[in-house]
Image (cartoon, rainbow, N blue to C red; front, side, top):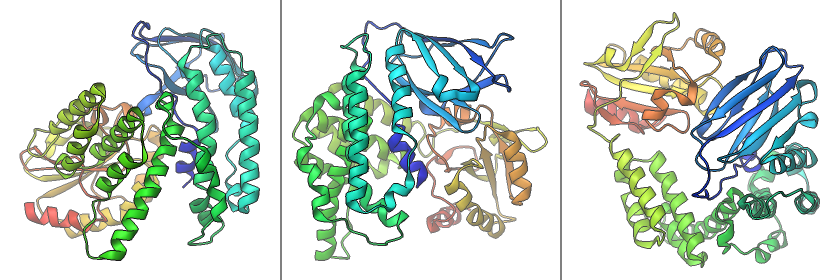
Length: 463
């Protein structure tokens, strides 16, 4: 729940790239009182790098492959986190004192106006207060309205070196629709934090929705705006689904199709609609087999008017088809508890069920007892179970495995999310489960979880 809430606060800033922009960006700077001698730079897709300081506390770091403005973050220790914005051609100089990270953090150079604004916004907005969801509706609304007022003032007063920079119009949407998202999610989160199952907020609590227009094409690069549009469409679609279930409780409902059809009715602006449909189908393609979402793909292709988005989806689908059933596998390598290399191809001749996981992942740990049961029940059969950790902290993995008496083949990859396995198999979240046949070909790279009864059915059909 906390990760979900955090994702709505620390949202990425993604913008249209100027074709004339230079490729790449450079970071330099100086840091005081950083005893480990390094800090973490995080970037899109889960990428993380350790930036090490020289003897004087200075550093230089290049981001050569940056082709569009993106959200990065600085992480000092385990707690001090700060998002910042990087665009192609930027040369940012960063300085801070590790003993007072946020209050001392300063940016200089091209793009410093934006990033110094983001630092001020983060400090003035304060940390996410989960206890706020326990408040009564009017108290919660007052708290969110106060935060909106602060953020609007900060945005209005911010130093802006280039008023035409797309960041500022997108940030306008981030502030307004971030507030709207916080209001929209009050009902379910109040139920959770106040422990009032089935809680319903007063009808007048949602009157703010009437004053917000989701047909704003200039805001389509705002994550907060897109999240709010998605919540509006989802709310309308859920009403339809509830009515269908009341009419016929046995009817099979394609909720994805209803969601996309509802979007067509609710969203009037074509650009907003195109982007909503693209994000919707992209998520389906990421987590489901192409054959299972072909109807949704066809729906998108028949409705979307944006050629660039159509081409992008077609390219994504083509990439996933290369990871479809019957395709040759990529022979990834990990290292076992003793540091020895272990390859997928070492187990040719057996079915191989792979769990891509991490010790910090709650859903991953939830699946462990079910995975243990599978390994016990299928012991002696022609199947091997590999658990591939993407932990950056190898010591945490080395401690976790024996403490929890994990079975099967336990290995860990290099470079976490940047590992070849994650890149080749397009892994964007964990746990991810994969199944390979006895000759090393793909059965599924989006295999069902151990807790799903369909997993045993698939095993039994192939053994």
